[in-house]
Length: 114
Image 1 (cartoon, rainbow, N blue to C red):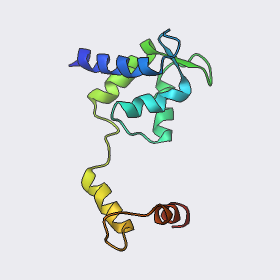
Image 2: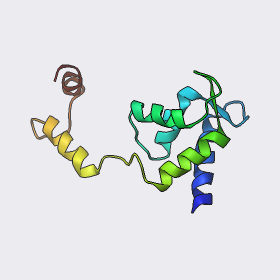
Image 3: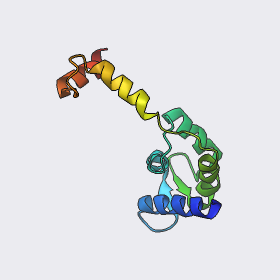
Image 4: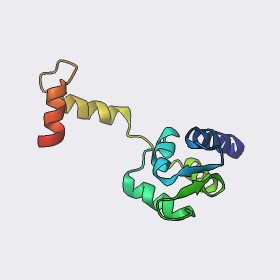
């Protein structure tokens, strides 16, 4: 199981390893974590980064430092997505006309005004 998880993490990491040197820009870590099906908020991403030895602030993350931290996250099933029924309930609350969709204008209004 651990070997499968590490393979999955390495494959996700490699997508963002632009120079093929087993490092990624620290700003890519949130995207990598989310691509693995984990959905931490930004504060939680920063907590994970604190556990990983980053070369320098704003620098690069090495796969060898990222792999054990992310393996533990996946094994512990941390940062799971919000259940579909909760998302559907939230959508239905925004769909005031009960038409099965939200217009772009309504979505913008809800996200910026309410």
